[in-house]
Structure formats: C-alpha cells, structure tokens
Image (tube, rainbow, N blue to C red):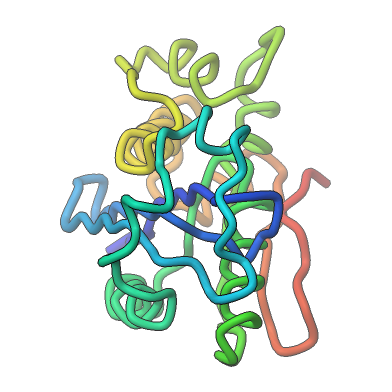
Amino acid sequence: MDAWVAIDFETANGSRASACSVAAVRVEGGEEAERYASLIRPPAGHDRFDFRNTQIHGIRRRDVVGAPTWRQVWSQLVDLIGDAPVVAHNAAFDTSVIRGANAASGIDGPTLRYACTLVIARRTWVLDSYTLPRVARAAGIAFGDHHRAEADARAAANVLLAEQREHAADSLDGLLESARVRWGRIHGGGYDGCRKY
C-alpha cells in the first residue's frame, strides 16, 4: 500500500532550527490515516521570536512556554513517519527545518526520502505562481488558514493526491516518474534535493 506523510513547519525566526509548530498527515492508500500537530519550544539559542515570523503565523513566545521540546516532538514524528517518505510544499524548507532542529538539539540526522509538491506542481499545471494557496486552488482544494501548520499539511496532502490524479499515478513513485521529478533524500552525508530531470 502506498503510504507517505505530508508535513509542514513554522519557524520562530530565520534560523531553520527554530521550529515552533508542526503538523503531519499520514496518507495510506489515498486516504488520511493519522494526523499529528504540536506547538514546539524551539531549541535554546534558536528561540527568539521575530516580529516578521509572528506576523505570518501568529505564534508568540508565550504560546510555546509549556510546549514540548524539539527532541520530544521529533520522537513523535519518527513514530508517525516510520519508513514512509515525507511530502511537503517547498520541501527544501521543511526538510531543512528537520536537519537544523536535529543538529541544534544534538540529534543525529534521519535517513529519509522526500517529495516536493511545488516541484511536482510545476510539471502538472501552468500557473502564474506556485504558492501553496495558488496550487491548491488549481487542484480544486478549498484551503484557508495559510501558515497554520495543520492547514498547510492537509493542503499539501490533498495537493499531492490531486497531482497523482492528474498524472493517473497510483503511487508516489509512479507520480514522480510521470512528472519526471527525482526523490529528495536526507542522509548521513547531507541531502539531495527533490528536483526536475
């Protein structure tokens, strides 16, 4: 059965290690199977909340005082993801948050495959913009609350399912092959981006 996890992060500031919110949606066989969302207390040294970031997502320092640490949240995400690949819209950002927050927390980087719905969208629809709201609209997905991790993760999951339908692909591997997009990977030596070929 095809299974993958759509994920979205919000950050407290410009540091990729400053994750302050996450949501993940596990999809199995084309259906939502499980969902996870949490505020995050960013790692020490990366816990400043910049006005610009707060303006975007509305999360403030006081909101995360009692929130779990990245180490706690990452443990939950690892359980949810398992061996499945990860999907995100602009996955370069979200996967850099995983790498940055793990490094700042003294956690070994994971080994995982990932796909980017933005890169795939460029091979699927001709649009004037490939932001998540614009791609969701092209895919016929009702979408509000942009920059709320829960809304963005669900939108990314639904965009990926719409991309599969557009390419008549019954798996994520099949979609990437049809769209001529390479898997992205995080590994011990760093990462390889998800990109067109």
